[in-house]
Length: 138
Image 1 (cartoon, rainbow, N blue to C red):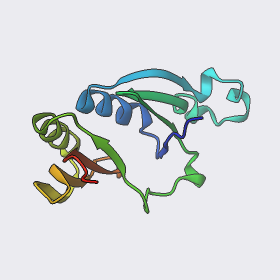
Image 2: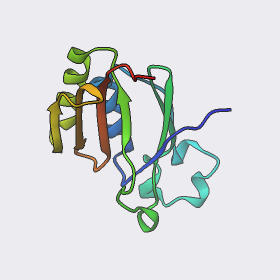
Image 3: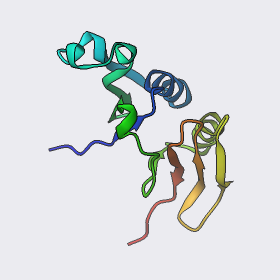
Image 4: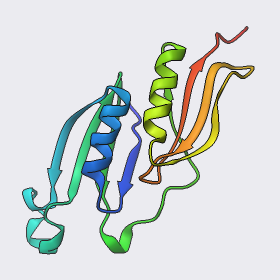
């Protein structure tokens, strides 16, 4: 069994996933537009180039995404995508990249639970937490 995050975008899913792949070293492993799908006939022609389903692999995690129809899009809230780096330089690099054009909520710093931890909302409105975690004591 697997649980995956599914992100909805306001018409900019392709740009967001390309941005995330570059920022995290991830790879887009699937992407289909409304116009390429069986739903093409039911979709407005101006929506045919929008993403009906996509997947990006970041490490061993797959995040799914799509463009929500305009009347069904709501800005993300109440969650964060959390990404764990193997070391502090990688955490710093991903944080810098993801925060480009976005808003930093908590700058990268050391905490009682992490060598490096920071929070941001990226330029697509998706909230992120980036961490290089300290070993947890028993």
